[in-house]
Length: 313
Ligand code: NCD
Image (cartoon, rainbow, N blue to C red; front, side, top):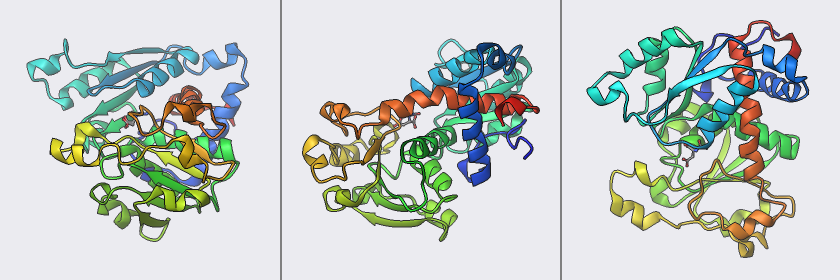
């Protein structure tokens, strides 16, 4: 199979096929076993720009560590303070300029549609590192890779997605990515934070989903629980946030009702929805999930930047 990622933008999980994703996961596994010399060849002489218009810890640092791990370099900003954005430079101009300094761009931006727009402005491949409440496609690649690593399959699994399904961009990307497989998905949220209608329209009948509110009622049948943070910063009305904050708290008591081999994932950061006491159970796999981000993003950079990736096939 020719490398499907070479020179490509990564804007939405809707653009991936199951074969694309599995090609990337194989590349990530292979990359892990390369000698340092072989690995360094994949990024040598290449530069990635990381343009972060919103806070980030994992996405930014794992992309940065990923590029360095394949011998490449990173430039960018993580705060618009001190950049020409403060003087009123448009996103289009910033992208067009940075495009000339690098081989790939990673953009995180508070507005939906920003990544698609920026990808149209850039000649170099553009990776969406989070676009408002819309999508976060590399997180979903990491989430699917984590489920496969933990469970060995996705088809036939019962996956609960819990929390802020309205504003959580990782949820949208995850559901689009899961639609390439055959799991059952239970969407658990307060009524005010139900999934936006657009996703149901996009997915049609490609993904089996049910909606509910009570996690205690379904926890016993769940194989993978994907927990999300209530996205305080995206609520148009702070009073609305006050009404739903703390809706779900995963603690040891709740886990008494769970399957023994339940896998708990979370894109992180968490803000109280998983109690620290859960970290010490074998079910807690969210830190392992975050750690996989570096290798997976290194594989993604390698595939985007090199046409010939025979070492990774
Ligand atoms: C997520 C994000 O930025 O959307 N974080 C991440 O990239 N792992 C999740 C969140 O902020 O809640």
